[in-house]
Image: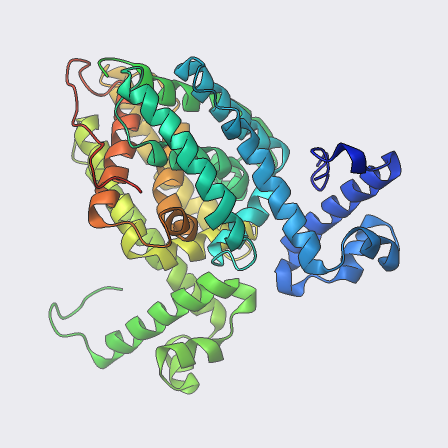
Length: 218
Length: 224
């Protein structure tokens, strides 16, 4: 889980020291484990600090409360997921742009499955903590990028689909390999092979999306 | 839940239905571990002793809830059996699965919750019934590929695409509603969703004749 909590990159004057960055990484990992196991309510600051291998006061230097840690983990997950969407370039080639988004999104599911599951749990529960981000910056970004996709459609560069449902489809089909990892492994009889399976899935995902969006008359 | 007398549910059936629907809501919100039978009885508006008469343990009740949504999903895939046309079979499957997400989001969320928690209660289910069922659908998809009706794709991954996309409209409905200005999708928006998903998948596996330029999925009442 590299730099899950490292939220300071756009803030160069407050760049954390190497030790601070390392501690934040440890807290992020410990928090993911703990929230995944006990949920938000069941998790405690003490358990997270113990698992991060630091004292409670030391951890509270980085984050004031359990809620702060939880929000930092979720916001970092969203940020990781949305960076490739932010970079969707209206001037780029639509097929390349969308392919790259799907590929990067799937790669995040492989590398950070726990973060994906924590986010899914938060949404399943009705987004009690992250609602303001969803209705604020996420909504704004999705609208902006749907307009980009609609522009490509209007130029006849891709099939006429409803952009927002395409975006949902990309989210759903990529996050599935993290969120439903246990189910997939059980059905395929390949316990523990989740990341390998997600890699194998890439070929089918790309082939269906690309033909679905860019083949034939548009 | 089998219907013995076609029209009039017995008291027993009616009570079981009330309990199962309440259980779905409570389990969806709190998961298996977090939920109590007391909460569920209260939600159903019946005494706790009555609940235990119908469902002796929390686990028995939970398994019924999970089996209920699972059986609803299985039924949706019956279109595979009596159909050699992938366009017809998959359109019908996707459409039914989308409708189920809209009609029974709680059941789908209970399932998702269970999987997110590493399937402590239904692991055996996944390894037996779900695996056998998947294998049987995979065999049908392979037949379509052999017959040249669709492109060679990996059938398992195609099924996961359909499952994940259709269930997203239940499991992530809170996020979808939020992005839609805090309102659930209207009937027309939902039809747009269905059409987009169906078109991408069917065109994506080459099931349509390429000359067949399908309907415009964009309309003035699209997602806001």
